[in-house]
Image (cartoon, rainbow, N blue to C red; front, side):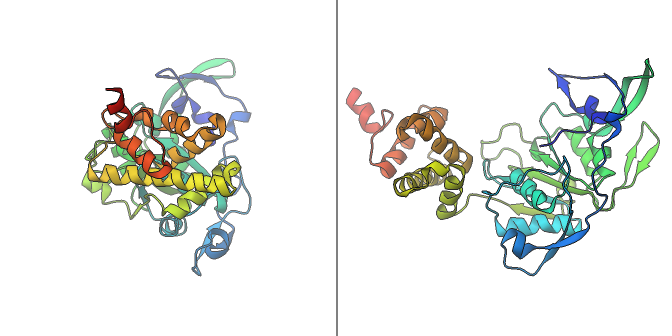
Length: 356
């Protein structure tokens, strides 16, 4: 993702766990505006995203440094894409929820990339505080003198520009951060800077998105430690909640082949299909309570990439996923591998019993 403007870097950039508090203002650091102030033409959803609809959405003709790069190999989920496009075109607050590795944040970024819409992504980890979002007083060097000056955080900066602000890992945010975000969840929600006695009106083309592994209910599955139970009043303010889960097997195979084109031949395609079959078994095993983890599409891509390095699917599987599993569950996962590849791993029940 692109960097934040220099003027606000003192709020975001960190050395260890401490934010920078002194920096020098120059004329160059003041250039933080987007290229265009509003979308200047409409694009066809059918032509740009391949979805069978007559919808047209606003877009920018020019790109700037805040626009994500286009990933030509990315495949869009039609329903989620339409939900995100509603956010861009109708100023809906959109949350994309789903299991890890499904490409939630990337989905929003790739829609923005094709609309040339400036986009800023913030990960709401435990180190992001209210001051990072709102801003704070910092010491700056101006005309050779150190002076104290209020530095805007990411929220006021984005709110005043035609920018799509994405809050990643939304359900892992701290409570004080959540209440800052709640102020701007209303479509025309004004943002008050108490330190400045100033009210910021949102730019007409400011957009807000979020991604989450849960829907505000906390870590019910045991997979997502650190997630919070979210205030229902805040969840109620999200206009659209889209779910992005794992794709059908054929589509997932196509995605992996697009990421690892070196496997796009007859034998390689069969190998990738077997990999996706193993991943599907881990997901079913997780749903049934047999194992406590599962393979995401991201893991399958990593496995395929590691196959290119080691030229050994079994070794690549062990290094990419099996070693991340609980030791007690590894024989079950090894059985999944054996079903799809017809090959016993050292971790399988049969090999274990032979050793004993």
